[in-house]
Image (cartoon, rainbow, N blue to C red; front, side, top):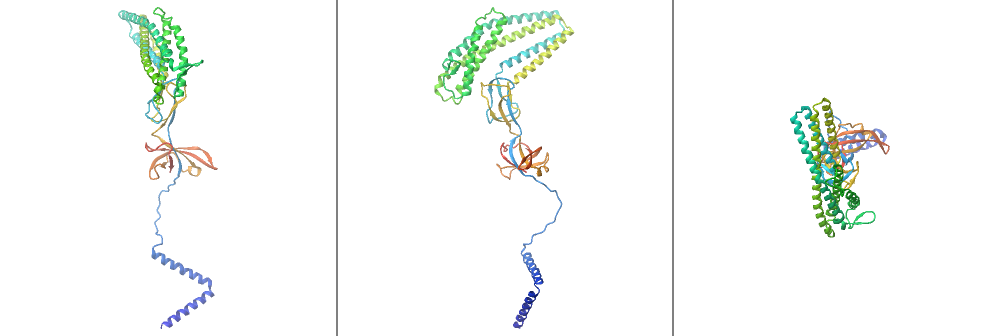
Length: 462
């Protein structure tokens, strides 16, 4: 039985082989179908055939990925609007400041005095206008006359104190500059130079220039101060007194500059300067006393002048009666005085540098005592709560971007898992060419404030 089966199979095999040789094309086709069928059965039974899914409709999102660097969206280079000597610097590089903070000031004694004078003039003009509007009576005229007499007596008494104050300025400033500071300076034929080594060459140059200039100022002042007495006319006293105040101011500036140099951190450990520092302490005490005295006399004289001028003008207008033309003229004086106050305020504001926004100080390029010119950058700062990224996008992708497009940003410093939301704020209409490919600048702004964001970080903009 088995022999018959084997015989039949052998016969079938031989006939198949014989047929295949005679009909090769048909045989190959049948063989291919059989192989495919066997493979299908094999892989379908083992689960290798991919699963299918249902196609559904939905939004198609196109994304553009570029890189750039984080930068502050607001930078400022700050300068004074007038020429002057730096009196105060309130910040250093790295300080965080709020909007409106005073960062630096120039010496502003003259500007402050001008403002006080303008304000006093305005008050007087307004008071006179009010009086003219109300009219006057004989009793009022008598009272105003008494006010004028009292103001004149006060002014005369104030003038009597000025010559002694002038002589005191002469004695103290000359003693400080020529005697107490004599060991600190040597004359080299053209000017005065410090007699010791300094660790701040810039400030040293300023001090030496000021010492040379103050010598001429004091000499000129002494020629005029010696001619002033209580019997001199008020115009001459005013002229010399103004010069005395100037000499006091420049001497005080010189003392302050030397103090800054000797007490700076780079000089503190130099024991050879101890004798100078001890001498400086006594000088500063004398200088403070002198400055307080001359300032109080100047304030008293200014007040006495204003009071007398105001009283005299008030009396004259009261006697003249309420004339419509006088009212118009006085109103014009008030308007003019208001303009002078605004101008004085504007001039004073030019001596101050304020922070225009909250941010971080990135550079301070002046030192106290340095004379600066209008428009010179003295302090630079960056905004710390507003950052942006400027990236370049090729022309094939820029058409997909528009203002307001949502943006996801990752920073290399924090990895791809930390995403910062942002938005497109500007797409430049102009292109630049890089490797024959037109590129467009796109500005992306971070949404909200995040203290982790720092200027200069590498950003991946998606």
